[in-house]
Structures are given as structure tokens and as C-alpha cells.
Amino acid sequence: QELTTVRVQDPRVHNEGSWNSYVDYKIFLHTNSKAFTAKTSCVRRRYREFVWLRRQLQRNAGLVPVPELPGKSAFFVGSTDEFIEKRRQGLQQFLEK
Image (cartoon, rainbow, N blue to C red; front, side, top):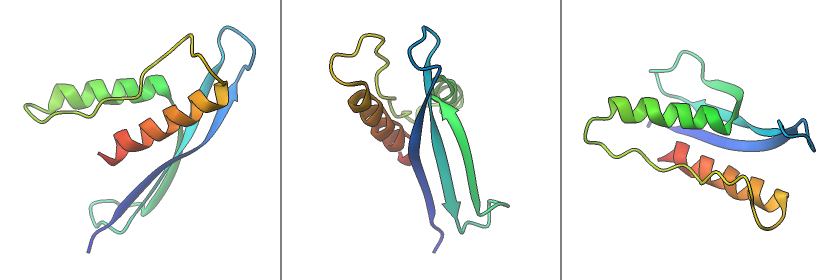
């Protein structure tokens, strides 16, 4: 039975405290599918790269609905850590769907 697991983990804040700060996430993929040459891979991606991916999927999806991404909020009320964790969970769900 073919199995593919994807995990969004290890968020890192870059340029913290500045106007151009951002967070990236480690995306870990493990599979036993014959369709993949590499059985494991790991990359770091920013939220805006998920936005790009979603646009590409929408462009090629036809009538198949593309999952939503978690919201982007410049002014989040609450802790930054809480926001980053909620976003991480939302990106995880996006990739799983």
C-alpha cells in the first residue's frame, strides 16, 4: 500500500522585530510511492510560497476545488507564537488535502 506523509514543522522567524520579518516552515515529505524518486525530502517555505502553490493548483485544477489557506493577518490580536502555530496547523491541513 502506497503511503505519503507530509508534515509542516519547525517555524522560524527571520529578521524578527523589523518591518521585513517573516516566518518559514520546514516541510517534510516521506513516501513509499514509486512515483517519487526520492523517498524523503525536506525544504523550508514561506507563506507566500504556499499562496503561489495554491494559485498554480487553481489554474490547473479545472472543477476540482482547491483547499483554502489559513488567513494572512498583518495585525493579529494575541500572541505571535499562537498565530504562528495556528498558521502552521492550517498549512499542514492544506497540504494534507
